[in-house]
Image 1 (tube, rainbow, N blue to C red):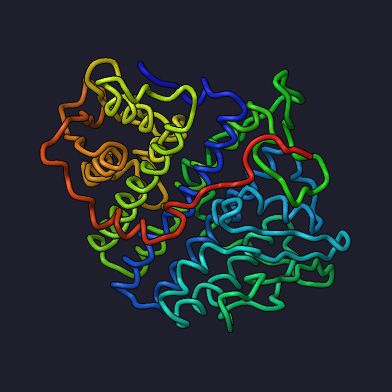
Image 2 (image 1 turned 90 degrees about the vertical axis):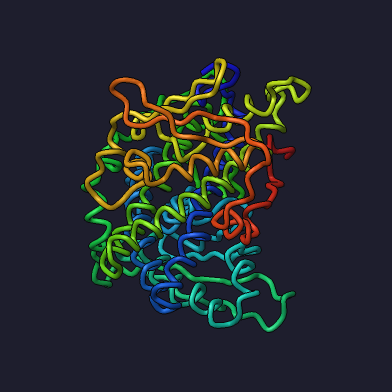
Length: 427
């Protein structure tokens, strides 16, 4: 790609920031997805779909993270918490998990801040209970059981809150009971294990990196873990896994919907989530890219289009590239090209790659472009020989209005959340 950087070009400190953005991106998917479900199935149906989605995806990607970072042999409570620190369901700081370990078989966590709670509190107690009780109980259990099937988790307290000043937002106990019958892997997780996405190899990381930082997590649990603790090579792998987690959630979401809705409604719901996520994540990435010292020169006449090309190059909708074969060319006019790949031929669920290839999610590419630069959009053009689909970035006058799916995604406090614990530790 001309006029920009790929993930391979980024240094350790930029990769740490991008990793946080990818965690937030995955978390934002449901901010558009679940309202689509409520419209069809009501609050109770939303709970069922959310539980099935996260219970299917989280054990699968937690297992991958454990293998990537070298602690898959660890089965104690601390290892469970390590896995949770790399979950798109818990972006750092936005869901500010604080962990404590009493021993190998007992510990706990509380949330000093829960962005998910802050999103649903304005909607009323029904939605607070749906998220903080009905969804969290089984999904916390599914995530932890990926590390040890004899784990159990229960709340000390949780919302609804008597006052908005009540902290922490919730508190939980985790315990390993050797006498407990091991929990079975959810059926949805078994299905996801047969996906082309999960079939991507978990890379083997080197023992060290000349640039510094950890290449694994064969260390005691660090409750204050931050992405900057890891090496560049580990962070590239983590960025890949965080994008992979988001795609796994989409596959699990669509699979849950297929049991409950007709095929057209399923497509509409998944596409709506894709449009909203693509747009709001592009907005966040544009701000992040703009804060980097290698960013596009804002004084350049080509600055808006070059910023679009840079954001599309890094956008998690188009990653990891060994799953979704996307090429962004920013030399002259900017063109995005999609080729045949594992994502377009996915065998489990309905994924973003297949929707893009079939022309059902062109609006998601346009939303990503519009989220970066006011006055630009994406239009479909003839794909090069041997490729599935292509889009060209064009200026439009007047600028397109914000798409309703993006507006819905921006309802979440995650859309504008700013990370604070950034960079090297001072102590």
